[in-house]
Image (cartoon, rainbow, N blue to C red):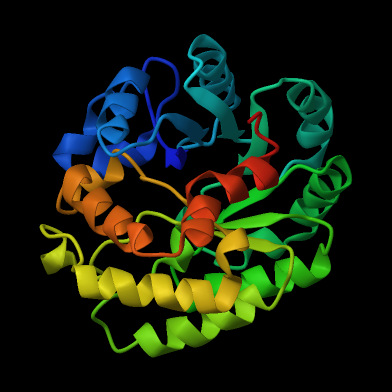
Length: 281
């Protein structure tokens, strides 16, 4: 089973400035061995590392880690999409690296939710599209999801992986709107989604995981919108350690997946990720 969304960080390798305001448990370094150990307890035997800082130094670090451990099957890395000349310079080298499987920027941390639609970003994404490199995209608001639809229409040959199902606002009035927007997003055939990083939306509830019933409803919605062959699983480790704990979050998620038909479950566990990221079987 492939964990398609595992983070690691070492502040000696990249600054990770966002950690300065993060909950205390996240501020320490989080190693590859710690992450793989945490998720292997739930049956994940392979993992894709995912960008967590906007530096080329972190890109180098993730690719080094991927090359160092056979349990890592790929890395979604950073390139500065707002700097198309830098993308043009570095992309050929990255495409030649067997562990490089995609690009991600911290779009949810940008003051402008429409940042991804800028002209420089468009030029960079044209290059990703031409090279067949997927884009992981973080959406935490309705504006982000609207912009994802615009992005997918603008770049029909670009595979876009929606991280964390666009952060369903569990337990909030906006939940129905998220359901409708997810269906609109899924109507665009070049969009894939990760079922990962799903926690209670309200800050006061982040000490607990979502319930089995809430997860089952989210999974049903995701399957109705995308179908199993456009969905994949991720742990979002170590972010879940401050949202009820990794064990609780993964237990709820995998119990819902285990209830699916075998072919659907296999798609979520490994088949979609293998196809979308071009992973070695």
